[in-house]
Image (cartoon, rainbow over all chains, first blue to last red; front, side, top):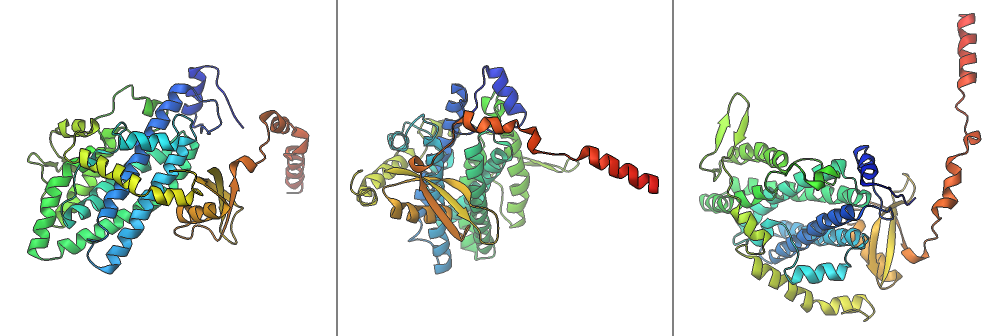
Amino acid sequence: MARSWSTMEDFEAFLDGGGLVEVDDDMPQPYRQAVFSFIEMHANSELMGGLTERDWIPKTPGLRHKMAVLAKTQDEIGHGHLLYMVAADLGVKTRAQMLEDLFAGRSRFHNVFHYRAVTWGDQVAIAFLVDAAALISQQAVFKNCSYGPYKRILLRIIAEEGFHMRLGEDRMMRIAEGTGPQRRMFQESLDRWFWPALQLFGPDSKPDDVLLRWHIKSERNEVLRDRWVQKFVPMLQSYGFTIPAPELSYDAEARRWDVGPIDWEPLERTLAQGGPDSARRIREAADNWSRTSWVRAAMSNGTAA
Amino acid sequence: MHVYEVFIKKDGRDEFRHVGALEAANDDLALVLARESYLRRAEGDRMWVVRRDHVVAAADDFVEPNADKPHRHHDGAAVAARRKAARQSQG
């Protein structure tokens, strides 16, 4: 049943009481815009992540892992599909407009997809550290998300990201148990990817963050980031790898790891599409989109480009 | 292109459940996309796709009156109290 709220106070009281907003509800415009932008960025990130994954299909060692990468690529692109549909139903932009903005470099996607994966070790580090970071963020959104269609679609996305993270850990375990050169390759990847993965959570949440106030997100960025640090610092160390944080410290009494000060400049550069690999990534995604127009034409009875 | 709503069901469990939507040019392609988007890991044994513009949706004011029909419920409180009192007096 479509609902409406006469004031923002009424709407916020509804959200604070655990209310779920549905697509045909007459939600306040600022909420509609905020939830749309959040889902659009998630959708863009799934698509950009899927394209990175696809690049590694021919290079993935071993048939079993190659098949898993094929499945993971399909999952990521599939997540993009589901999310673009949920975002488009909000009526802010059509799916075509969202894709057009992404390929023109006008909209955002996660910082980690602004870097280049150079070695197989990088791909393993991404599968483990980045997928874990994404999973931690998504679980926190799912737990208390006030937008019903997003919450429901997150349930299946989270289940599949769990497969990806376990696959990543399985590959890391094999590398850790491998040869000296393999371990060195992974250590170099860890040196490259530790900080970008940690920065995926973003800087500390601002006190007036509307995403928190409207229960689109349920936990502060710094809380999620810390959850990742406490889990993955000791895990990486248990595999014999070194955390690339010169000021890393451990408080034995509180049993807590502290990675030291975080340089946020690299994150800010990626947000302005100025990351180390941003331009190439966006261009590749746009080229890929135009190269595959014949598939879309065939799938739309020749009516769409 | 049309928007299709997707419903799936596991045999022996639950009713058909709405899982999401997709865009497709026709029914056959909608089924392919629905299978590849929503059933990659056999999340259902049966699947329906329904064009969104074919869904007959009730207006709010059509549904709303039935939220106020207390005579169609009976919480049994009075009878339960009488039964309890009877048990205790036999007790």
